[in-house]
Length: 283
Length: 69
Image 1 (tube, rainbow over the protein chains, first blue to last red):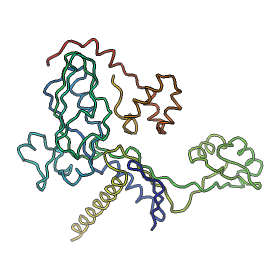
Image 2: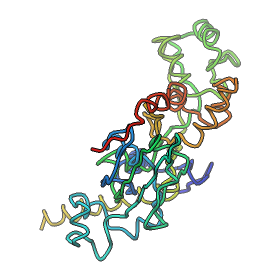
Image 3: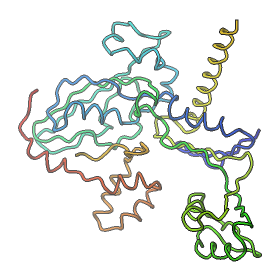
Image 4: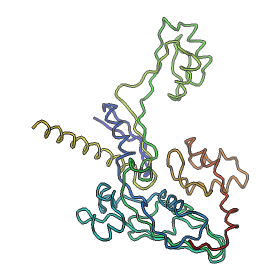
């Protein structure tokens, strides 16, 4: 079954999938939000925080920074092994998984030195060069005068269902492809169709005495016309059969392609788990 | 009080576009056109960019005393 890449950049991918059931594509779409692991700061140890931000706010801002995780997915322990493990326990080697560590440390040590400065995500020093802020220009905390911030942040792999900071995808949508409109002649005759096209020139037009879809219109525009302008007159959108557009955009921690691959893998793993569970229940 | 790291709704990191956006809007350009130019297409991100107000630079002046917790 062919999949055609319509657009691709590191952070964005758009696929045309032919012959795949909507349920499968939707499972992959949801998995790219919920099940694909990525790195994010989970704990911070505050040595000193003179800034105007509370420790909690600082922790939140640090957690929101996307960290590159392409290599980290193989090199660090999976979320299941580290979810209930604090950095202290990890340091005492109570919770490593197959020799892989749970946490990577990032250090932030900045002072204003009498000026008014802003500390950026680029000032974070990382223990592992593979896990670093994907964007260096994110402001973390403002400092003034003699203020100083010294923080050690512990990042680990996690999944989006635990917290939104571990969601690699910002957008993941499955869209049907709009082909045309169908009209019930009994509900909407020639006169009514003409009126509809006149009221809704953005989405509809008359061609050869029939109501047709205007080129370049969107489904939301058409549905607006159907529901609010030509209300209840038997007009329905018609979609291409068995063809969907799957679009994924990421926050920069993983590439869009990698996110899709990991999402598909997560769905397959879940199906395998279900299969073995059912087989053991039978036997 | 500081500018948001990500869009509140979709989670798109708003930097480094936010910096250029603010610079250009302060120079007098039309905010909508700047957003189009920077490739911010979704209305959730556009809303977050447009509505964010940074008051940290004003507030911080009242906190020159060093607090030790």
